[in-house]
Image (cartoon, rainbow, N blue to C red; front, side, top):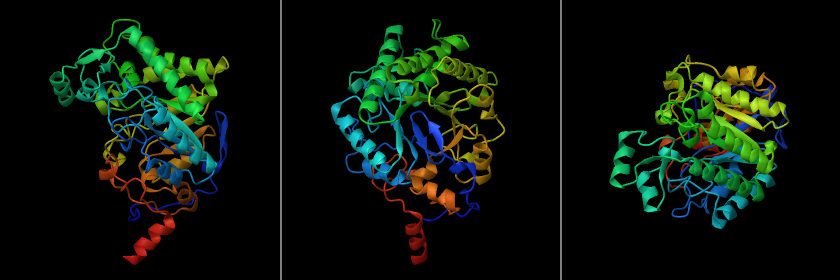
Length: 399
């Protein structure tokens, strides 16, 4: 695998990136987080984490002691899923595999948080119909795109705006998924309220046309997300709960930076979380996706960077902040971000391609190039075969 040559690595060993920080009940030894990364390697049917590759994959990326790992998106229930090769955590078989993964990460002296996700209208309606499940979203028939609309119609599974009772069931599913994760050994969970999945569909006015207490106003659109957070705080304590938000995201039909009023939505959510914190219920972290990542299928170089800033959070939230958005190849951006003492940076694509990423950032060593074509393929290639720096140098020298 070739090394990246289009930027100049800078050793970050003596920067704030390598200061310890308390996150929930854990204390990380540096501020590089492995971002949640959908990889589509779970066994289907069954949504079981891959028995052959997943332990190795997470082992490779947690070798640096004190690393915070956030898992790929994990469904807390069958109704929350809808994508065959995405993993779940609601059956004994799934939980058994996750327990092995969590144990391996902890053996390495690192920490693991499970990202819990309800897919909503990003699910495949025909796959949901096959399994006798609804095709859910915030509102009826506001499809993400024409392809999913056609698949929904052909499978007689139209997009369904969930009822208040169904919202309550989703909250119960999040609670049970959280309990399953913690009982299996996870240090906590991150709630997926970003990138166009179900909770984000409630937050965004383009996908939420409801007229009840879950739609319309900023407060109402925030209600579902905050009810999930409150239920998890009650179930396992605030120190085991985090949340991921994408204020600027346009992916999956979200408004993001295209709507100049939408930032007020996220200021309200963050403010509500800070209110809970001041009442003694501070969650472990808030994780934000940078405005330069408005679409997860584009590299940041293809996305304008003048659409906004996540710095707004520091005026409201006084806890740990994780910021994600192609930081590893931008050492100056890393140093600027972690100069704020409550901030960590998350790496995604380069944590896929560079299993020893933390060591390389520390030493100023070049990163491995990533192969986007294998991000979501059901193969060992592009999953567990990326080299360490020493292995990469040997490969380059042998060519």
